[in-house]
Amino acid sequence: MNNELYEVIKVYATKPHKELSALLLDKSKDQLIALLNSLITVYINDKNSSLLREYITVSLAGYMPTNTKIGYNGFKQSTQIGCKAIACEAKPQNLNSEDNSKRKSPRRLNGGGNFTDYTHKRLRKDKKENPNMLIGGFVDGELAYV
Image (cartoon, rainbow, N blue to C red; front, top):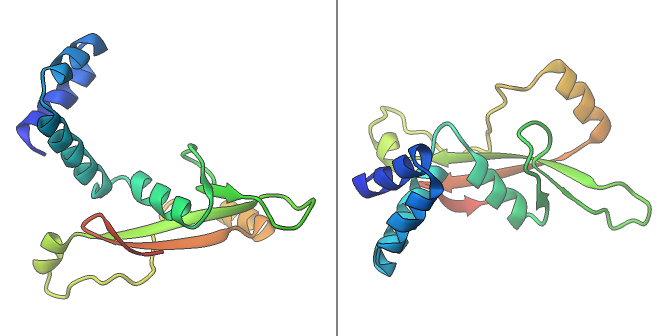
């Protein structure tokens, strides 16, 4: 994260939002574009959050993304009249090429996702609901496949 982006985030988190507006209004169009680009790059490549990658995967697959932390990542209407919505669970994988180049055996996109929060209770629910599993592959935040 560059210093300019850090300053904007710090003001957002520690000052009244009026001060953030004043800070941003003093920036040129090119500076604002650079800040937004930096923010998206940091966020989409974040190892602790897959929110943006999930949103892209779900949206491009034709589902409406949800804003909930727990539960399915998206829904779409069934083509059959009277049927309930079809749920989806997104499991995007992101490879960071810089980190990967330092590994003895580099990671590869393999369709795997993170299931660390998956429980037996969730498995029983999913067996009943039968959601679609969406797999997304990203390299340095750039979508390679859904």
